[in-house]
Image (cartoon, rainbow, N blue to C red; front, side, top):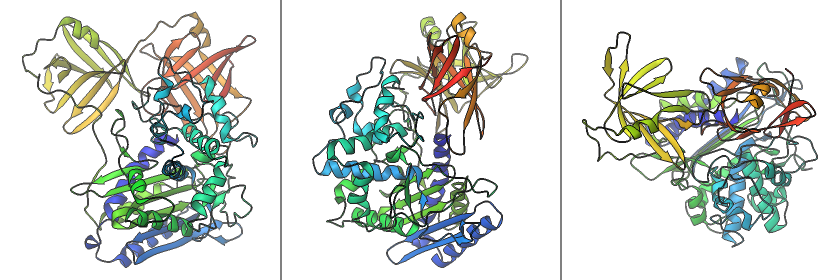
Length: 584
């Protein structure tokens, strides 16, 4: 569920970016700080969070930092700006920074294939050239590498360097630079690359090349003897729940920091970005990190730097860089506006803590009206060949007929009376062609009445052997899935329909997977229901072969492979490295 959470937090953090920029827009920094302080105190008093620590850097002269609530509720130990907490995926910018330090030294080139530096890396590619997977595509999550390999992730015996062997039996989800596909496994490979090239274990490299130069003396990895003042972590009811650190150190497991140290980190990045020399990285390299690096990625609705999410200010060149981290139990977020010398940092030791960003953002929203560019269109269509009297060839019409699937919903395109009809959410639309790929929708009502939707256009587009359907509504563009080959459900798959329970290695921590159910949906696609502690989630699944299913769509788990095998007479489902046994 982490990838969905990331998307929501990005939308929320846009508000924060709108708010902190521009001192002339804020009547009083002291009033702003007091509002944030009062809000956090109120949320803690209401029982939403046990402990919070926060900081605002507002130019060169103002830094507010404060702790609220408890790091240990039972022992009444307060949460302070020196309380350490796992920062989760907010570790990823540290990993990207380390990779760019190596590039500065000429040890690597992020535009070259991963296998040039990690020759033992292999993955099933379904015909894609593995050399297209560069270090850069991994840094900005466009390599197509699966999101996670959960097997042994919390065993205590496995290391991040073991991920490379687990990936040998997995499949690439998409061609590199096609889809933003968030990948913790990819960041483990970056850490492995650091180890292979430098001979230094990932934690050792981060310690010597980032933490020590910045005097982040209180930060470190979970096995570090010097790591002290670590906060307890709590569930939604405020009950202690043990945080289990895993294998995936470069992706965000096991790195702990606090507000005081993260202020040093943010201030140094701000200083370097504004010309400071002789620090942990050169100004020109950091500007690359904070510059848009994913323009070539087709399906990525947000701007991204190297290890950071980016938002651009309208009417100027400033950037707003952001990353969050969540282990569910511990939550961290850091946002930097380098040119304005501003930053915001938040650490929360309670499940759901990142929602506090949205609440703090609503306070800051009243203080400033700066607008950010945070969305972009996936594909630009040719408008030159549009004609209201376009007569589309019958073969072209037939090409568009079929089922278009995303991870969680589908759209049907049918041909009726030489016209295309779109069925979506129990609604019917007649599609009138205005070019080979563009159609104007007319909503169909009972009694065959029609209503034109003049601001909407549906488009079909071939991209990397996928036939996609898009909806443009005014300035907004939505990707509605790609056409899938709905294969006949043969006896092999009919016999696999049913419930599966997990056995052997299990997820650790708060959100556990207990079982899964495979069944046939109304449109004859297979669907998979996964039962987690947090709830039930249903996904569309596409048959790829007699032993493989693929998650539909390009969001979330889209493109990842679900494998099946036999254990004696029992069917076995293999999902992200976990094994489930058929029970009926």
